[in-house]
Amino acid sequence: MGGRSGAVLLTPEVLREIVPAARPRLPGADAVLPYLRRMDEVRSYSNFGPLLTAFEARLAERFEAGTQVVTCVNATQVLTLTLQALHLPAGSFVIVPSYTFVATAHAVIAAGLKPWFVDVDVDDWMLRPDTVRDCLAGGRGPVSAVIPVAAFGAMPDLEGWKALREETGLAIILDGAAAFDQARQADIPVVVSLHATKVLGIGEGGFLATRDADLAARVRQLTTFGFRGSRAAQVVATNAKLSEYAGAVGLAAMDGWDADRLQYLRTSRLMRAAMTYVPQVRFQPGWGVDWVTSVCSVRLPDGATDRVEQALAAADIGTRRWWDQGCHTNAAFADCRCDALPATERLGRSVIGLPFAIDMDERQISRISTALATALADL
Image 1: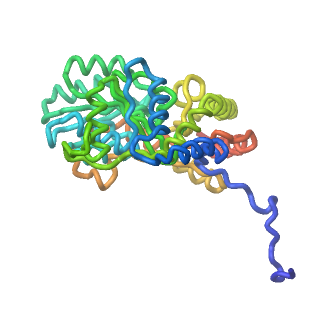
Image 2 (image 1 turned 90 degrees about the vertical axis):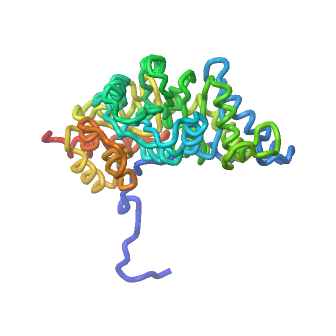
Image 3 (image 1 turned 30 degrees about the vertical axis):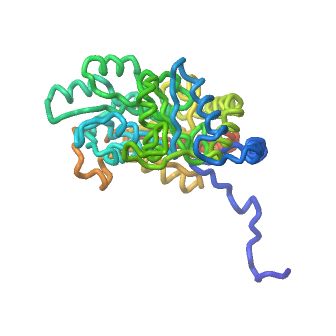
C-alpha cells in the first residue's frame, strides 16, 4: 500500500526474461512418489535395496547381453574406482584429451596415476587412436591406460579403440559422462554420469557399464568398504553407494526416458532450424538428429567466443564454456605432462555452450538466434 514515490512497477515488459545457459529438469514429485511409497513399505533405504537393484537392471538392459552395471555417487568416483580396480602400475601415465571436463583428470590423479594431456581432432573434438599410437612411439615413460571422452555426448570410434587395445594391451575406459543416449555397448568399459545436468539425471550419480564381470565386481567392492560376500573389508575401499532415494528418482527417470528423448529431439531440431540463418554456427555432427544430449555446444568462427559471450550476456542470454580452454590451463594440473595442443587451443577459442533445455520454447530460441546473428554479422 502506497510504496515509495517514483518506484518502478516491475512488469513483464520492464523485466526482460533471462534465458539461462542450463535449466535441468528431473522427474517431478508425482513421478517419484510411487517409488518412495514402495520404499517405505519395504523399509529399505540403502545398501543395494530393491529400488536401486531394479534401476541398475534397467540400465543394464540398454546394453548388450552380459553387461554389468555398477552405480556410484557420481561419475568422477566411478572413473576413479574403475582405474583403481584395474590395478594399474602406480604413477604410470594415463593418456587423456585435454579437451574434456576437469573431472576426467581429477579421477586419474585420485587413482594414483598421472594424466598425459594430448590433442583432439579439430572436427569431432575427440581423441583419436592414431594420436595415442604416436605418443607410444615416442617411448616417453610407462603408459598404462587411455581415457577417450565422448565429447558432449557424441560417441567416438569404438572399433578403433578396441583395435588399439588389442594391439597394445592398454586399458581403455570410455568417459561417456554425457553419452547416456549413445552408450549402448560395454565391451570397452564406459562411465556415464547421472548428474542433474545430464539427459537422464537423478541429481548426483553415475554408473559403470562393462561386460567384464570381474571388473564390475571389483568396482562394486570398492564402493562398499571393501566388502565382497561378507562383512569383512578385504581391500582398502570407500563408501560410494547410491541410496534407495536415488534409485527411486532413477526409476522415475527411466519411466519417462522415451518421451523425454523425443522432446530433446524436438527442441534440438528447433534450435538447428533457427540457426539456418546463422551459417557461422556449426553443430556437432549428428547433434539433435542422431543423438541427444543436455547441452548445445557449437563451434563459432575462430576467436569469436568472447564477442558472442558478451553480446548474448547484454541480451540477458546465458552461455557456458563447458570445457573452457582445456584441462591443461587449470592450475590443478600445471605439473602434468602436456603435448602440443593446437586443436584444443583452437576449440577453446571457438566453442561455446548456448542455452539449452528440454522444454525451451520457440520464442527463447528465436531470441538466441537473433542475438547470435547480430553478434556474428560481420564475420
